Length: 139
Image 1 (cartoon, rainbow, N blue to C red):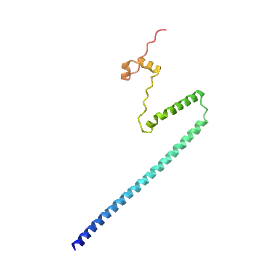
Image 2: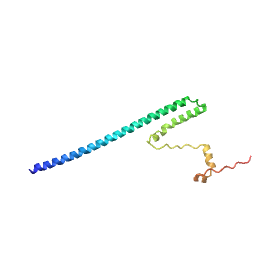
Image 3: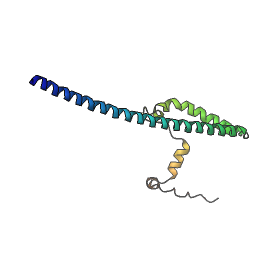
Image 4: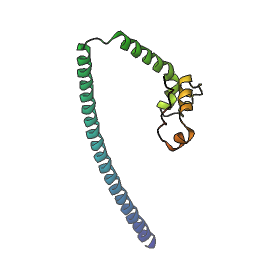
């Protein structure tokens, strides 16, 4: 008789744990459904924003095509700019993708840059002050 009572008691405990676990599973399932619904709503909103942005870009591109062509000097500068961007893209790609540090450039400074640095007094550079005016010889 004691054995039956112990088995009955264990059976009740197991049924209680089962009911508790089923309830927890149902609560988790409801949370997952709510989260999925929220993600779906956010995704639809993002798709609508992206579609709007693409439409705006297309409109701007169409407007730019209708404008007068650029001056040849401007076109040359633009071409050179994009060529330099493409040239440096491989070097900067890991940094732009968040996979590495920014590349360090140890190129020599141009003569113009060196002249500008020499013309500014050292104390003005340190304190962020504007450079002092140069004294020009009388003509």
